[in-house]
Structures are given as C-alpha cells and as structure tokens.
Image (tube, rainbow, N blue to C red):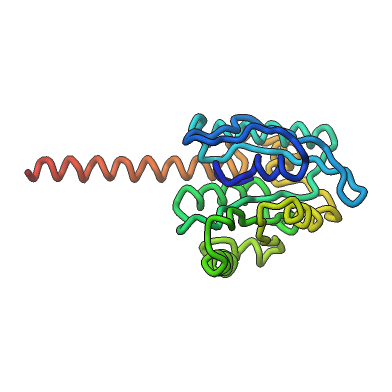
Length: 230
C-alpha cells in the first residue's frame, strides 16, 4: 500500500517477475486490486497484492476504500490472512504534506494497532536523493511523532529499499516468518458485520471529507468578504 506513484507496482514486478501496469504519466495507473505472480523465496510461496493509492486521480477515497475493503473481506472469508503489509513512502519527497498524512492515516485504520507488528514501512526512490539527504529524512520520518514514530513504537518496522531485487527480497524476509493475522478492516466487515461506513477506516474518510468541506466553506466565506470589502 501507499500513495499513488510511490512504486508499489514496480516493487512487485521487480521481486516477483510480474507485469503489473505501471504509471508513467500524471494520472494514477492502478485502478483495481492486482495480484502479482506467486514465487518462492527461501522455500516459501509468496504472493504480493497491489492496491490503488488513496490519492488516486480517477476515484474518490471512499471508492478506493470500498475496492480494497471488498477484496480484503473476501480473502478473509476464503480463509486467507496476510503475513505482512508493506507501506511505501518516497524518500525523495522533500516534505510530508496533507495527502501523504491522510494516506497513512487511512492505512493505519485499515490495519489496526494489533497488526502493526506485521507492518513494514519501506522508503524508496533513494536514487533520487543523496545518501546524506536520504538518511536524514529516513531518521526524521522514524523519529517524529507526526510521521511514522507512533506505529514504529507499536512494533512496525521501517526499512529502506534501494531498487534492487536483493533489497526487495531482504524486506520480504522480514515478513516471511510472521504469524498471519486479520486486519482491523477484515474483522470489522466479516466478524462484526459492520457496514463500511461504520468501520474505523470509513469513519476516517467521513471525518476527512467533513474537514475538507469546512475548509472549503471557510475559503468561500473569506473570498466573499474580500470582494465585498473592495
């Protein structure tokens, strides 16, 4: 998982030999849940799942949440639990803006705190920055309470990916021996029979939309005041 353009599909193609669609333009490419080719790593069968980012250019956050949640709920009903969840973040981003924070907030609500020990936050695009800048950003992301520190404190890992197959395999090896667990969204939808709007992730989307609406209305009010003042 991760924002649009963070390299989710590229990571899967690299390590699994898949041919998932990769976006090269300004529009997001992954508009559905995609499953990579299964492959063996250290004698274990691995299957990676690719999801759209919550900042997709073609679908709303609610539509994307429904898409991902439907897939996760069905896989849980079918008896499949995830051994790990990878969240990708571009180390080349010189600041973490509102969209990135909303993406990660949604990710947390999907996973829930009890499964964070199976989460790996992966920083990539290291080739786009100097080693010094990359290491400084990696440290800040890991140690700032506004970013990834709260989930790292609850057992998540944070690792760099250097765009090589060896690097990708090393990340997956940190997941292989995990005890598979149901994500919070799976338990809410299947075990607790909640509507998606009643889940933590659904409520998170509603809060974000309400906040955006409030800010938009405030901007319109100020604009009208400025026009009347002139």
